[in-house]
Length: 386
Ligand SMILES: [Zn+2]
Image 1: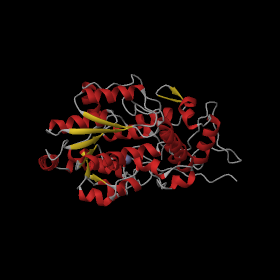
Image 2: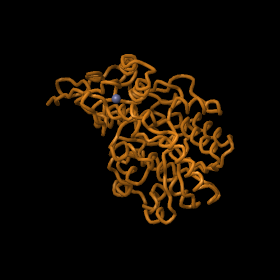
Image 3: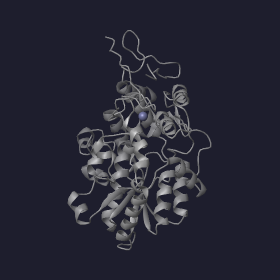
Image 4: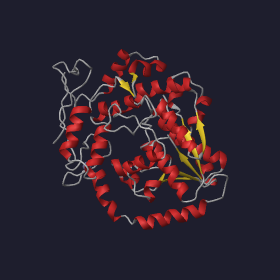
């Protein structure tokens, strides 16, 4: 039977859809990501900076390193490392390896180290990682499930090991992209954030033990440290975006002036050449967001530009219509078949998983309820605007 279609409602200011998880609209149809942005001028940034300076005084010189910065080598983490250095802190940079590190991602990590920082790179077992990629893709439609857990938990584990009390993450994504009220105005990240927002999608670490022949010792590296241990050592993770006005474009300009390499052409599924350069699997991660919720990275990027009055809503809508819903045949120029090879997954099997996660209420289907695709495997979204 043909499933009923739904008409997506869009924010009247930006392009965020009602299908985006945890997005809330006000009576004028404006989303909470936009209202958070409009409220930013009310934030007393000078006071926030003072708050940061007090924190700096408190944490300085208590251990070998004053704080941890989780890094990918991208524009935001390069900016974060430079920012805390500016305030006299000596950070330890911690990189948790992405699932399929690209050449440019490698170069940007090396650049960050060469700027004069100490860095620890943690490389979890790649064979197990591929197994977890496949489990994430099949069970919750997210190939990046293990990567997102590792990026969050590994800096905490290193903090425990080296007795470093403070971790600085970058922006509070719930502030820029909308999210549950509890998380929007937080200045810190914790375990609750990881479980509800951080991409676990209801699949717990111990769940994989029953799904595959995996030893519980092998997944220890992904485990969040015991609450008691964190409390004893008073370890806390803050958002730098709480203390300082966060602007991706500024971060990019500052980072590029400090050696960040960019692709030189827009990344697949993106409007820009300077974001998400460190993992070939990222195109698949973003594509599943489109399949499940009907929007992707281009909607995110266009909406950020619209909020800042850098493009009109119509211009943004045009970018989205033309470029967003595209099957991920390659990412950072690596063909899909090569990206899937470590997972032992063929393109045909991959397409079946894609179809099983596609929300058939928001894409065109035929009389039998089957998804309609063009010769390149691209779907057609039913409505792009109100
Ligand atoms: Zn909006």
